[in-house]
Image (cartoon, rainbow, N blue to C red):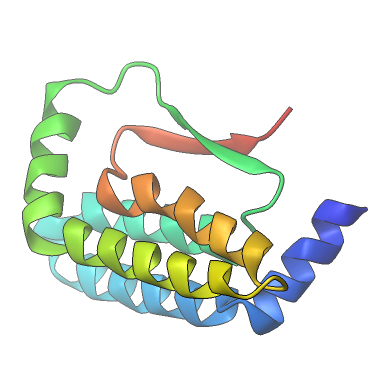
Length: 126
């Protein structure tokens, strides 16, 4: 019940809706450019995770090999470090306030996903 409440508050007040829409728009742009379809899939995964982060976690996908690692290197250079840095800064800003600490922690959870998204999957936390 607490996860549901935190996710609803995150969606409305923590920036989850804005992040989800932003990652969704990035995914659409990646789908239009046919070569970047794998990045579009990763952006959709990030959109889903950023909309509803509490009670979910990111784990390595079995069978993800060298191509996903190489694509992650390209992702890091083009977009990953900007996204990770923005999540770190937002997390620090939210943790300054006592009410925003859970949302800051959620932003910190999004850092590895934004930095290295390919070859991972979002699963329900135990």
